[in-house]
Amino acid sequence: AVPSAAWHVPYLLFWTSNALVYLSIFVMGMQLSFSARVLKGKLRHALYVIGLMRFVLNPLIYVPFIFIFRLPRLFAYESLLLGIMPPATLNTVMALKYKWDPEFASSSTLILTVISLALATGLIIGFNAM
Image 1 (cartoon, rainbow, N blue to C red):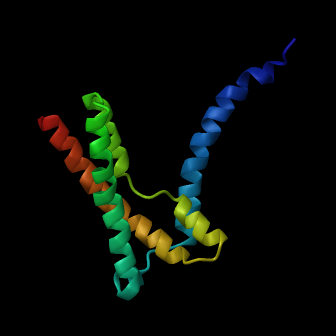
Image 2 (cartoon, rainbow, N blue to C red):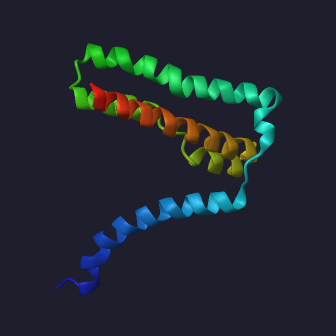
């Protein structure tokens, strides 16, 4: 016979992963803050390059594949939307772990997330208008 606690394992695993996502963002936010130096000098140039790659290059790569493989409209919209999603918090975690520049990583994540939300909102409104 299987112990009764074993039946709750899938339920606990489901909620644990969801809770850890929010907890990681909270912990990262407590450790790091926004740095205005990202908007100056060489770091500003790096931020432009990251934004260009994320918001221009990704869709330019996705669009030909959408037409080549004749994806259904919903899949095409999903792939474009996923292409402009903000950078993950993993960037900041990796910067902390390898002692790179965690303030730049967290600040660029914040800035690009705000830009991504605006672009995604515009994209969704544009798709609904079609």
